Image 1: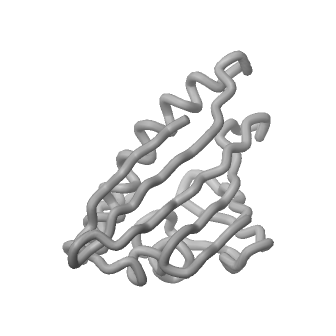
Image 2: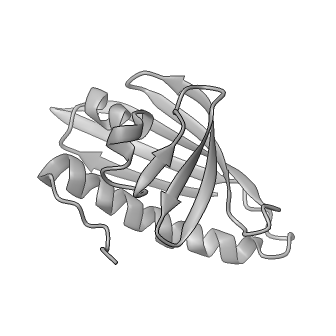
Length: 140
């Protein structure tokens, strides 16, 4: 499992919206989203060099957002990502859990290492967007 927590200055409503609203998500994570982010929906997250599907499986406004997506190119490894948001002072505490990564499965340890690096970067981009109105994504 990958487990990360971050303290954000934004209120829970804004943090939740940054995950659950396609326009907000595209301001800090992928370049664009094809489809909606409602429970039961499959959408495509689009970057310049790849497209990844994302199935929303649970959403509780201002509290939790849960989705499934593939880590390996052949889609043999699909993990569940749970984002939990709690009020913390004037801001929020976000916890992200991604997994499981069955380490006996071919490619899973590499996917786990990639998840650690990529989620760390993604949460830095989220914080820059929410707390400083800055887009840290590299531009091609």
